Length: 292
Image (cartoon, rainbow, N blue to C red; front, side, top):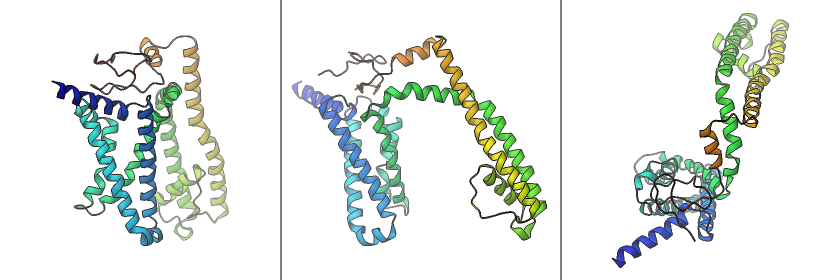
């Protein structure tokens, strides 16, 4: 019986260190993990530079293996410290952690899979927990809702832009012709889109006076076109803010906003993390939470 209690205690303590960032040990673990993630990304970036890789290939190779082994141990620890391992394995972060670990092992059997270690950059999303950026989720949710509410208007606008690009591209193909680089209509449409978005790669340019006049008109239209989706989203964002000020948000949205807090307490049973400050039990499964 004591053996089971001992095993349960060390798992519970390890879970608190790995999954939570409110304790000194949890903060230290997250900070160390964050720097190892940065180090792994730097190693991948340096290895992609041929001159650096040719000179320091062995160092970079062993460095990546050290990081991979540490990530593997962390992944295993995350699995054994939860009561329902599949909850973590199939979670968003669980999948990212697995994808950031297996490429080095796959490189033994699949050529080219080593390049997938760049997926480790996705692990930087954990910085939201480390720096407690949840306080900004309310504003990000408002922006996401504004974009969602604007999707129909934006879709119509983009469809109109595509039609205009096809029309202007076809006109430029007829005006400039193959001798000036507009060898076909798709390539002319590509030029029109590049010009309309004010990107201007410069790989194709009109040479006739009429073509240059049309290009000038497209450039001027481009500035107006860029402002349209911004105005649509801004209008929806302002509308949503006004509705919030008038207390017209739904009960579900209000409950969600009330649950936004700065603690990182994680349920050992179901991995839920959106607990209110001071909560003693998980609001989702009722499992007892850690307390110092």
